[in-house]
Amino acid sequence: MSVLAELAALPGVIAAGEYSYRGDRFSFKGDLDDEQARMASIMCRATTMSVHMQVDILNDFCKDCGLNPSAGWVVRGPGFTACAYANIFCFLDNSSASLNDVMGLMRRRLRDRGDELI
Image (cartoon, rainbow, N blue to C red; front, side, top):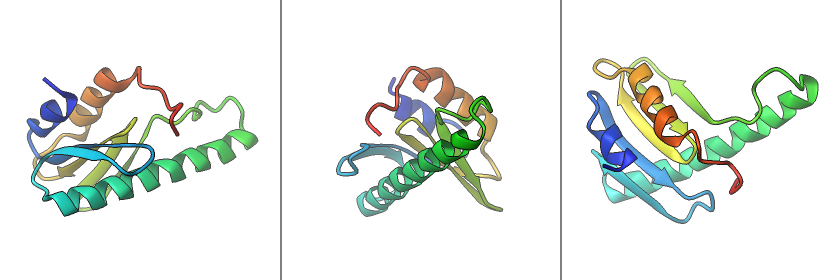
């Protein structure tokens, strides 16, 4: 089973997708239409690039803080959460999803993906 299918099958997961680091390709599973998935992949790629830049800046001030290299990010609001690990994103309904379960699955399945394409 693909990581997208595994994520999409978890309780409370609205959608899971994969984006290219170039920003021109994406795939997804879940409750998004093609245009929403395209916009989500663009947003997640931009956020990933921003997080990598910020971690690089922080690393200049604190070489051994354990932030570099960045593997992913999470933005949690009152109702929904967006998260990414490597180049996989996931949108969650906070009332029924477990962020720990989602991030745990992403870490297990994606930990060996490098960031050399960023």
